[in-house]
Amino acid sequence: MGIEAAQVDRQKTVDIGKTIRKKVQIHWLMLLAVPLLFILVFYVYPISGMFLRSFFSPEFTLTQYVKIFDQPAYLKVLVETFKMSATVTLLSLLLGYPVAYLLSQVSPRVRNLLLIMVVLPFLTAILVRTYAWMVILGRNGILNQILMQLGIVSSPLRLMHNLFSVYLGMVQVLLPFMILPLYSVMAGIDRRLMRAAENLGANPFQVFLRIFLPLSLPGVGGGCLLVFIIGLGFFITPALLGGPSDVMISMFIETQVHSVLDFEFASALAVLLLGVTLVIFAIYSRFFGVERMVGQ
Image (cartoon, rainbow, N blue to C red; front, side, top):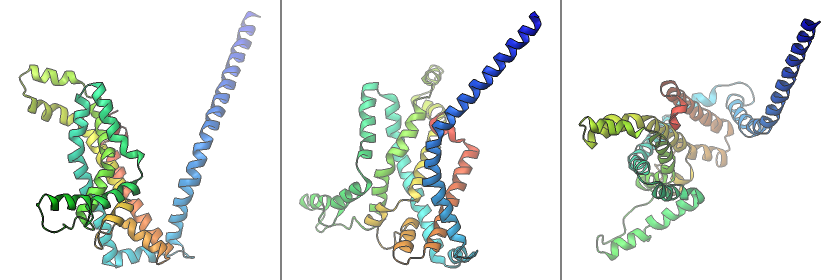
């Protein structure tokens, strides 16, 4: 009887455990239902519709993709988009690395103040910041007026509607996206390693070059990936600050939608851009791992 009672108690314990696990699973499913629905409605559905529209008009066809590779102008715009995004990424890295390094070295009080300055631009819309650059760089803008009053130039410089203004505006917007991943990785570097290198006779430059820089490379890769991908889809800044030849693929897609009303071709361009972006992301994930973007 004692053995049978023990078996009954054991079975009851198993049943209770199963019931608890089911309740926990239902609880998590209920918590995930809203974000999953949000992703399906606002991400999966639009992207699926765009993908299908690029192949069906209304029957299955590859005409839109043939048009992209048949006309050199379309490929030129795509190449220019990647070139501009890569240049902005490089400039952001050159400017953002020293800032992130400084953030990782200063005291917590100074660090908090600097971090506020880094994230403060997020409180202002990109459109507003772009218009601010137009006021600064315009023919009669603030910068030209200062240069002329100081006697440095005799006539206004052409500071807008060229690659210079596009790069300046894009770097200003995207720089925080480079600084924050870099700082996240640098903050996790064990300072004892650098002190050990100094004790072994290494000078500060050697410590940085052989210890700190290699350990910060995951942040470099993560920041570059983030800035590059966001830069590929930039529209407002190049449209307002760039010239006629400074066309990015997002501007071309907007023209196809609003001016030409060729939704199928615009969808094909968007799918191609998305596909290339996913390939770049997959390559990064394969060699570095997505979790290394935050130093894990």
